[in-house]
Length: 235
Length: 382
Image 1 (cartoon, each protein chain N blue to C red):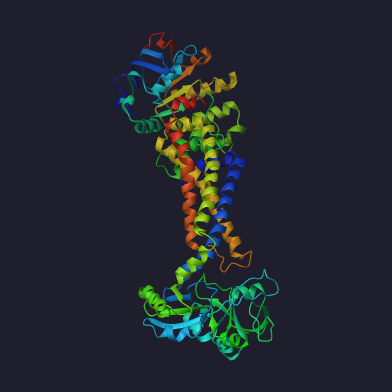
Image 2 (cartoon, rainbow over the protein chains, first blue to last red):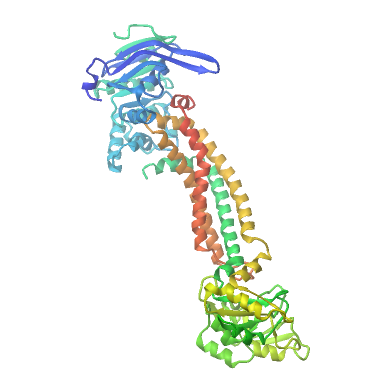
């Protein structure tokens, strides 16, 4: 995504989005007429009670799900118009995901986990290795590259998860409760890292969290309740 | 290739389960190898039958004898180049379980009409010079540790003039086959010695082998042979050697169908076992497959990963099983009575094809399941 693509005011534009899940004969309205703009290089926290639609909104912005109504535009690309295949390619190029439970492949070493998104590129083995080393260095885990996830602490596993998210140098990082499974100290380290990625590397970060302590690290916080924003989305 | 570590790590995840599945596939392919070798042993004669040879037997059955004098009449029939004869001797060496075929033949004619029998010239010369001489195939010679110069006593169904049924032969030659599948278990000895020494049925032989001028007209020549002896005391039934061999094998049953039925049952069971393993493996990794999709793997790539994994498992089991079968079969026929015993090269490729098909079949539904996975749902199952 170039600066030009984002020059119309926001990297992420969510316009009048509705999301309805169908369970049997019942329709569950998770998001209702929601609009949100996230400028490039912003660190945004999404807060709200369980079931408020935070993760659903994050999934829509990351192209993991499609809105029932409305549009999601990221970097000038109307992503809900992309085919499944195009959407997968788009995610590989432009988005990094960080999950609450790290979601690492337990049978792969830290460096192999970080390498996964690079397998979808045309980089050579040597180039992939270089990128992996750089990503692990950014998260401070160069010395743990060969370790398997089960030998790493929760904080270390989350740092491997972040290294995997940034290894392709995406514009947008989407973090779903990145500190939700960590103690305060490890959580702070992760938040420091996310702040550094935002400030020093220019990453746009959208972070879902329950934790006010975590949201305080963001430049802006928006609140969701019953599928609607509870504060001004364009602060 | 770059995805191989990912696929391999999935197989290594539950080592015991992978090992047991691998073993079940391996055992199935060892069985496939053995059944291929047995099928080859029983039907190999059909494939190796000379296209230019006819077998002529008594019309009633092969145990009825024919007059030796038919030879001259056969050789006068248009299209017949040469006719020679053999007779079932039915000898036992030491113990009835030591079965192998022995037939009296006319040496020069026999070697002429069977070019696949490879006998060194000096041994052929010795056979022509020794009235009690016999040549034996390499397999039987090795089985009983016989060597040239040995005297071999056989208890036969034929009595000699003095009532004695024990016949003693001098081994003067050990022959090999010019083709891989040539049967090297029989022993052949001289008809003149046999006919002179036997107590009864002199001048009677078991069956004739005819060489025809034009293999394309073999059926026509066979008809002429049968017409020649029509309405005689001993009417004949002439047929191409391949058809004769096929009829012989058919006495056991439809070997190919029996083998196919056994293998079908085995591979269907393996299909269920491996299919279940793959389905379980994919179910356990639902969340991880969701992560792969989230980071940009397309549906096609996820399907390929699952299919390659199942093909790798089936392929590995197949190659190991076929190799093990080949190694064991190469050590020789464990029964010692099969005329040939080897793993045909053609069945190697059939085996590899089956292992690939097994991989695709067992991976198909799990792959479909992985493809249909919605990312957001899958991530909730981590």
